[in-house]
Length: 206
Image (cartoon, rainbow, N blue to C red):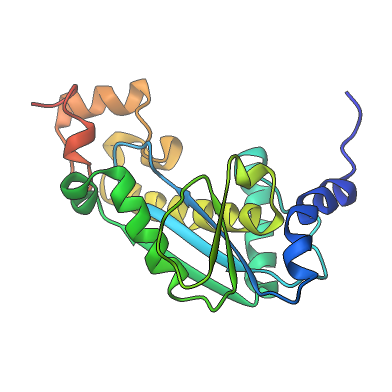
């Protein structure tokens, strides 16, 4: 397998954002993490990155190792012009469903960021104060969305590691709240904790 040229990869990601930057527009990328897990918040990051310098390892957060993601996360914090974080709790997810909870968190994150254009991973019709551009697989296509995916992932992972200290029986530091065999077995044995999404665990808990 040929070695990936990181500089070339990040230039390809930035090419999606470049037409907006070239018009002098402030571009925000937005992505969520945590729509699928059984426990914890859904977390959204909305990130405005400068046109340059490009951070070499910005990529879809799922393609980076945990240690690499943590390093790039810190670089993004040091480089970004603006970062907004939105969240929806398990209770909100249960009350209004995961899609509406995700949109709520997206509007919350975007409201913290002054931008002309919002590049959004897949979700549309948010009613933001700016141009919304939904992009399928945006975290693998846009530099700004990829940066947001890293921020959202690390913020949520840190939350799950803290929950793991309170509720070690579920293995949350390892599974990050997803329904692994270990997690489901613990749920059946111990029942849910206050941070489980009741609407997501109906098949495992009465």
